Length: 282
Image (cartoon, rainbow, N blue to C red):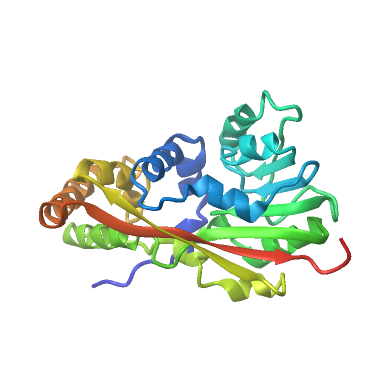
């Protein structure tokens, strides 16, 4: 088996990120899959809100906010939301989430490594499923600590180390069959095994695990999720997208074989939240 290209080569690649997150279309496909085919009895939003524990009047800085997945629920609880993302398209989607709120989210286009926010301005900093896309993760974590008030809480969430690995294994086998070089799972750049990276900036971090899995009833459901992102994880990705058809066919055959044998395609996923309190009086 050929050695995959280093994960950082595409997890932080500007062109790849623009294709994936220029707007919420591909992300919404994945969100739909999480909603329809999840195994856990605990809804992800409820679990995440329990980690954030918003209080009325709290200023919550959502770094890498995407389309504002949590913003409506946070606004309903009286939080003041500041969302930061590099993608203008995502921020436009996020804007719609709190248009009817008493205090709509304030949205800013910026990078996590250089937050245009004042020292100690936030009661809570949230950074969910985004640090693996950041070139300088230490700088981003330091910026989060800088804007957090003493006694404030940081909730930094990412994929579990084995999240969606079964789909990546299918992709790797299909890619190599077709003569492509598969790239590593981008989530490996920052996953649930990287607590020491957070603890270096936020001492006393605690780890919270959300254990879950996809249960796809058929190959078509799983293939739609795969086609929203993983299919493009090859080193020789052509600009015209001509790799997609052959890869989709090759992966579909493998998925169909699994469903025929197992009845469903089960793919472990889940998340790890690192929760820390900034030192100093609240």
